[in-house]
Image (cartoon, rainbow, N blue to C red; front, side, top):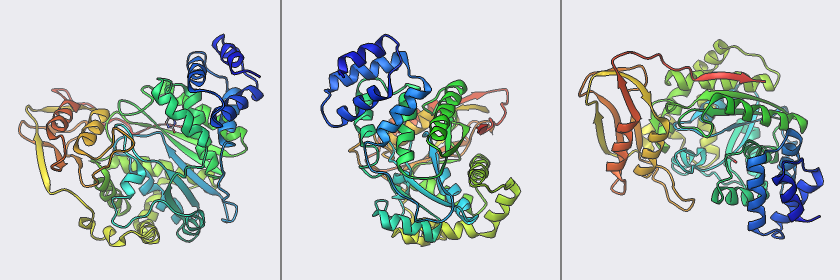
Length: 430
Ligand code: URA
C-alpha cells in the first residue's frame, strides 16, 4: 500500500477501504507518513468527503491508536456528555450533579478553552485548590463515590486525533463533518462510557453556523456510536447569544451554583433540564422536567457538587460563599447609547471580548485569568433606555480593555421593534 495511491483515490472521489484508512492513521501516528502527504490527504477528504462507513473506520482507527478507559468496575450504566463548544456554556456543572442525584454515574473528560469558546477545565480550575488531572484509579473512585467526576483529557487517549487535529488546524481542514465527527467520537469512545449525550451548538458563537450542518453532525456522531454498539442522542441548542448572563471562568462557576440552588437564568435551566432528561433516558430512566425541578429543590445536586469539589481537592465552601471565588474588583459598566429592544447579542463577539480581558487563550500555551469576564445585564428581547447598563466587564491590569469594550458594544443590536426570546433547545435527535 502506498500513501500516494490513497491520496489519489480520495482526490478522485472514490471510497477508501478499511485497510487503507487504518494504514493512513497508523503510519501517520507512527511518524512514517510526512506532514505534506497527510495534509494532501486531509484536503482531499475535506473536498470529497467520506461516507458513513469510511467515517466509522476513521474513528475506530483513531480510537485504536491509544488507550481506552475501562469503566467496567463501576456498577450500572455509565454516561458521558459532550458539548461542541459555546460561550457561557456552564451546562456540565449543572447537569452532572443532577444526573448523579438520580443514581446514574457520569465519567467526564473535558478540554481547555481555545479561541472564543471557554473550556470546562479552565472554569473548574477557578475553584481554589481544584485538581483536574487525576490518576485513573482516583477518577474512578470519585465517579463511584460522588456519582460524577470531571477531569482533563489524558494524552494517551486517541493520540492520532491529537496529531491529526494539530495538522488540520494549520492546513484549514478543520471544517469537514467526517473529520470533526471522527475527532470528537474517537475521544469520547476512548473515555469508555456506555452512552453519550451530544450537545451540538448552532449559531453565531458555534462551530456549526446553521441548523442543517448541526443536524448532519449530530446524526453522523450518533451513527458512529451506534455502529460501535453504544447508545447516543443529541440535543441541538442555540448559540446565537451566550448562555446565561455570565461569561468568564469563575463567573460561570458562580452562575452554575445559582442554577443548582434553583435560581439560574431561564435558558441555562431549560437546556440543563432537557439534557438531564435525555441523559437519564439513555440510562433507561424516564423523568419529567417537574421531577428534575423537584430534585434540584431537594438540594441533593448542590450537595453532590460540593462533594465533587471536596473530593478533587477544591474549596467546597465556594458553594455557600461564592465570593471565595476569584472575581476581579476592577469593574466597568457599558451603557446603552440609545433606547430600544435588544434584538441580537453576538455570542462570538462576547467570547472574543472575554479572551481580550484575559479569560481565554489565543495560543495553547497562554495563561488565563480566572477572575475576569463579562456579565450580560441585558439580553435579547430586553428593553433598555439610553444610559442603562447593558453589560459589566470584570478586567485586570493585563486586559485589553478597549478592544473588549468595543467588541461587547458591537455585539449588541438594537431596534424599535421587540423580538422574541429565542428558543434555547432547537431539537432532540435520537
Ligand atoms: N472538536 C474536536 O475535538 N475535534 C474537531 O475536529 C472539532 C471540534
